[in-house]
Image 1 (tube, rainbow, N blue to C red):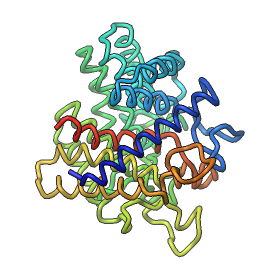
Image 2: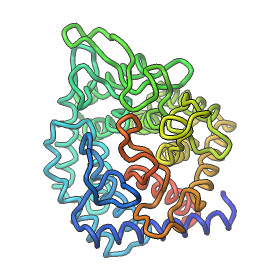
Image 3: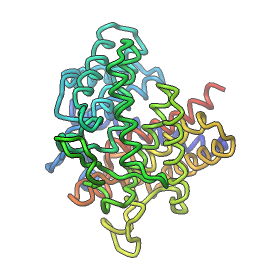
Image 4: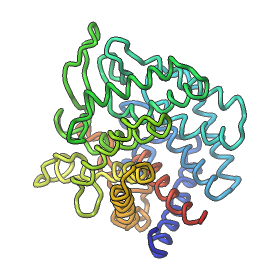
Length: 375
């Protein structure tokens, strides 16, 4: 366990996170931001794709589950209901992000059938992105495109398949995991952002990227998605091959991290160059990986790896809870974590707060603090 001083800092960071999210809800009720601009959530600018609503509502559920505060539950239910219609959304590959963070904790709390039905429908909707020729779930870019991000969303299909004993849903989910591992997870544990397929034959054509430095680089957030996503899929299926992929991702992550354990936006970025394309930190990728590594530390069969994964996760959280990253001493900053990145090449949300970074930071801190509280 981290020492009492670290735990106190983690608890203080969670209290700060509650304050920031409460102020967001009060200033802009019903608003689901993606990234800040000059530290402010409400602004004009390209969304690229609408995929982050579950993170804002999901933090509200986390706050309620940790504290029992009725006001957080009220807000969480209100914001979750605003997302319910998206159970039928065929335009995004991110329904796992939206519903696993909102309707799943709500259902686990109440057991209400309607909430369960929404989760199952969302899983079925996501499964409709499956391309039989190629055996993958396609990204929002088009039918030829497989994103590493989808590894964090395919658990929704596994969940729906497990709950309904639906072999077709499980077939789709397993096929996607296997194709992703074959085509865009590399032997050294790094990942490509995208795989491109021939839609007529299903033949794999090449690795590519939209958000990384290059097709053959290791975009940090994509690697974090894979590390955490395969860990989630292992938990839902018990498939040891998924654990092996997650560990391969994690081992690469640990080998390449800088001293403060918070990655740069791409592991192959030219650090002699200035941000955004050079030495730009990516706090959201660090938060995602920290949360994933905490889980992976409990799953690996290697005591040595378990210690390394957990120690790295805690070291990352130690860095992220310092004022260099945590906005607690930055007047007027509306987000929680500074130095996140959305889309470098489009210059969207670069060196800003990003909503998924907020969510996974809160999630990782909550795992550690709650673990201590239950001992």
